[in-house]
Length: 64
Image (cartoon, rainbow, N blue to C red; front, side, top):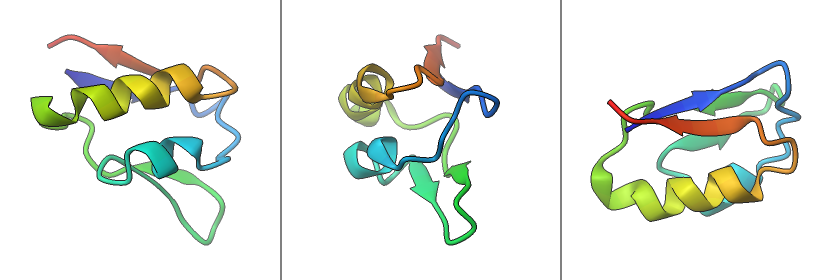
């Protein structure tokens, strides 16, 4: 899987980081960073939850 973020929609509210800190990080500059855009399959549940919980629907998963 590949994590895709629409940075035009993203508000960097860090909900995704709270759910999957292995994949997402909001830094001191208030921007979201994707730490691993091809996370291990073992993180799928967390990434899917981050997708669901994103208030701006800025995160999606594309299958490789």
